[in-house]
Amino acid sequence: MIPTLTTDRISIPKLGLGTWKLAGAEGQAAVESAIALGYRHIDTADRYGNEEAVGAGLKASGVARGELFVTSKVWFDNLAPDAIRRSLDGSLRKLGTGHLDLFLVHWPTPEMDLAAVAQTMQAAKDEGLTRHWGVSNFPPALMRQLEALGAKPACLQVEYHALLSQQRLLDWCRPRGIALTAYSPLGQGALADQPVLEEIGRKHGASALQVALAWLLRQEGVVAIPKAGRRESQQANLDAVPLAAKLDAEDVAAIDALPKDRRRVNPDFAPAWDSF
Image (tube, rainbow, N blue to C red; front, side, top):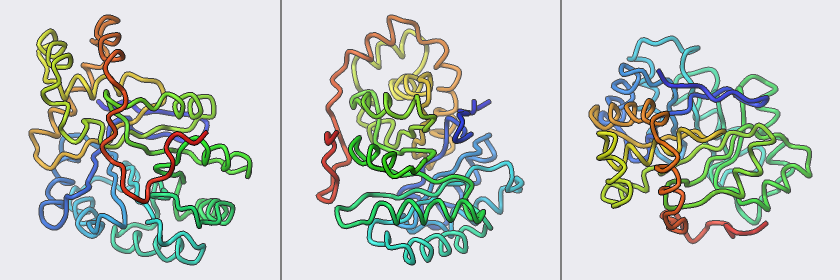
């Protein structure tokens, strides 16, 4: 059973399926498989080019739309108000749904009119096109700017894993009821042979990746969306849910002590991550 994170701003399953690079028949099959296993939170984006496949998987699953939590995102070259609406309309059409559960700004840009972006996202929520809105890849400085505008995003999605700290963003999000969703929560596979995680895994009969995921899932206000195309990987990630409660203080301290500066997603258009 996947627990749900509930705050004043959002209610969202703490474990979801990331679908980056899962397209076509493979993408559809991955979504169907995950939902059959018990996943109810599916994350996609216009930029992924797989919304039609994800939508087909949602439909084929046979699970009622109201039981699913579907996230999509608008790319950074579509942040003018009219372009945001066109992107959202396109996502809804390709996904075959009348609304999203969460609509995110995928990446910020220096040129965006942040006030207009926030107003457009809020309008989409007010009109019922999305149940919640939020942002992705926003550093602390931009989160502060959003609050100064009176905007109330429900979620912030960023790279977060056992080798990358997001403590300043967590400290910002938690008291405000903003969910922090961890993408690349397994370090894009790089944590699979991390010695400390492997040692903790042997103690609990789990893999290093399951330990890394459990470390995230046990944290207040944190959601994780590992990409998993194969049913075996999806099940392994599900098995990290009960492991989260089994990690003891010694385990957590050892993971906390690992280097926390190993960012893996840092394109040339990324914002100044440390801007505060």
